[in-house]
Image (cartoon, rainbow, N blue to C red; front, side):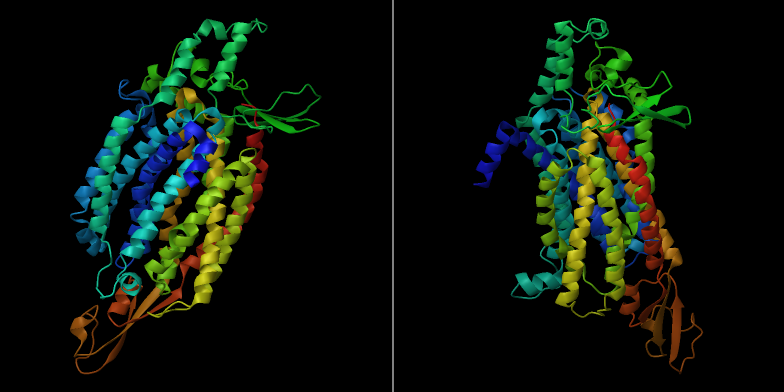
Length: 606
């Protein structure tokens, strides 16, 4: 019944949508491990700073712009422009998964000394998935027809969240002996239902199988059709440059066909469809370096035009010319561009005023969410909440986000940056709620969490996710609107890279700052009879051999290790609250900056 309903709604497009979701799901598997599961597993033996070092493994998603022109330019034509990268990359990732399954447990058991090696292994995995993401993002622009193009960001959200859910929630839950013994087993065991080596082995094999199936049974028909449209209409430089003959029907048809290859236009005054009205306008000229922003105030709406005084910058004339056509002429297709030419085009995109403004605003704004994203769950672990309890939040959170993503794809279509800014403020509010939930959460010390506390955490987590998800769908929709298909992979990847980098680079610094501002102590009672089992020998601590002494061990001792030695762990000053409070104040200030400088970008006529 569900399939029939989807088939009626999407028609022949359903197959392409399913493939996009599946390819993004594959990305989500290592992402869920790197962003969620592995930091939890490191928490016992590693400090916040060491966990921050591990977050470097996620940086390839922020650096993929460096090699995206290569992915866009080199491929095997007979095999498929995007499949040339997607298939071998996924097979290689599968081989890495299978290989590390044999020694991952040893690395984690010695995390305090092996954190660098663990980081390198997952850096390689994320590098492979980032490369796959370049090809999939570009394929999304051509595999979907124009009326369904805005669903690409929804496919990405659903796919990535599904993969993350499997590698984070499902894995931590099923690998927990407590959960398995309580709900799934009749005979208790000290192991969970699945292990990390087995999980990696399973997905490594599945990656390879899916890649072979993709290579054999899925072609790039939509992409081929798009290229054929260009060829059939004889797009050449002379025809497009004949702008003086506006009444020429052939030229109008050419422009019409070019517009057919653009992302779907919004019905509202947006980046792709803001009709130029002949009205009296009040212009304000604002200089930013060598660039000039002209703000035109109409009686009906406000349009913002970014005019660049540099003649080398790209000019968009209501979507009539692609960036490749503007720079190199109509006779050059994307497939004919060399990496050097793509890098040149990439530089032109980066120097566009609205892209520069967008980049700066993302980089200075997303840092506020790091106390939540990087440290919140670690603080709940310190309070005694079990990993599987935290992961179980997603059992309700996951399907809710999927439904919310589908609904929000319609909401964000017309004013994505307005919605992004409003969701940002809601997200800042939930930083406050999350901080309060940690502060008032009781120290469980091995006990069970009450249903009231669990439900409160669940509700806060769920609504926090809604705000973050709305931001993700909004920015994805906006990126697809302004992306030029002539260099689809590089253009979309540039925008996603900016957004990903803005959310990734602060992790290490935030965790280091929390570590620096936190003062903790571990109180251990040691006597002559049990000093061999303590964290340090009695001679190291200058203890009497006959009397019981109370020893205070300061700094960089994790709560888990302290409790294992029958110690009492105390936090004298918690850097998390200091950093979170600063983030809230900063976030409120940035919200007003976003309303002033970010929202007008969605009204650009590009």
